[in-house]
Structures are given as C-alpha cells and as structure tokens.
Image (tube, rainbow, N blue to C red; front, side):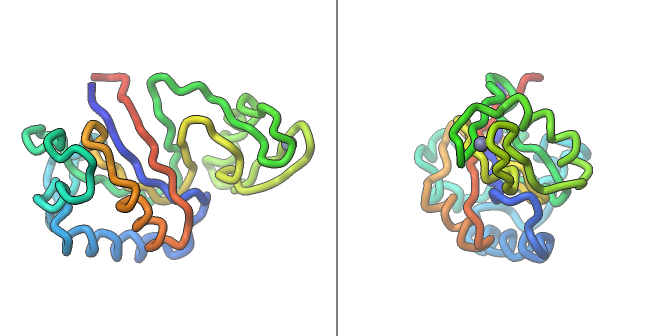
Length: 185
Ligand SMILES: [Zn+2]
C-alpha cells in the first residue's frame, strides 16, 4: 500500500506561504534530503516532485525503509488550500478544546464552507467556542491549510520528531505530521 507523510502547519492561512515554501525547499536541498530538480517521482497531477536525496537517511527513524527503489519517492509541495486527513481508517472524530465534547460530524460538515475560503474558523455547536479549525482536537493527526509537504512513501521509515519540529521553526507555527494510507493502491 502506498503511504504519505504530510507535514502541515496547524493554521488555515499561512501568511506569505509561497516564499516560506521556497525557503524550506532550499533548506531541504542544501541538506540533500531532496533533489533540487523536479522529476516524475510524485503521485498527484503531473507527478512532478522533488526526488529523495541521500540526506533523507539522517532525518528518519528507519533509513533502511526509505523508498529509494520506489518510482514514487518524492516530495510534493501543496500551496493551495487543502484538507489533509489519513484517508483509509479515518474516523472523522474531533473534540472541542473548550467544552471537550465530540464535534466531529459538524466540524467535518463545515469543511464545505472552509474549503472555498468563506471562513478559517469553526464554531463549536455545543458551547459556541470559535477558533481556527486547526485549534480543535483531533485523535488522528490531521490539518487544514494552504500549505503542505507530502513525502511520498516515507511513512514506513518514520520522520524523526526533530525533523518535524524544524518545519515548525521555519513556519513559526505548530505542525501536524499526517499519516496517510492511500486507498487506491
Ligand atoms: Zn465546545
């Protein structure tokens, strides 16, 4: 089964997100974690992605499981508003950070308004608490943002927490590490 490890800032609208994405890409290339040029090693659309580099071994828990032999092994960067959830096995559960009640059904329904950008926020139907939708509680890491870094088939190797934390430093935002198992493979 194909997997994705997706690092996503836990905020709907990252300011100046495209220059930030380019700065992060330069950092990843400098550390040889990814290749500098785009090739067809991605998964979505035209499949263009930044191929895995030798430096990737230093940022994962099990380097022997990195997808060097796999044709789909690259980093895709998403700079459009997107919903990042685990796909297979996703429970659609969410809790309110204020009243702690389960609000998953209403929250995931509200993505109809979030996706076209009518709002960045969700309001708890139980207590009225309003916050950026990423401020609610998710049992399985997921995030909703205009920026996401999709590492194709790196999940078995496992991203080191220090590597994930470096994204948070670059972005000045907490990030989610979303684990995706893909349905279609
Ligand atoms: Zn509430």
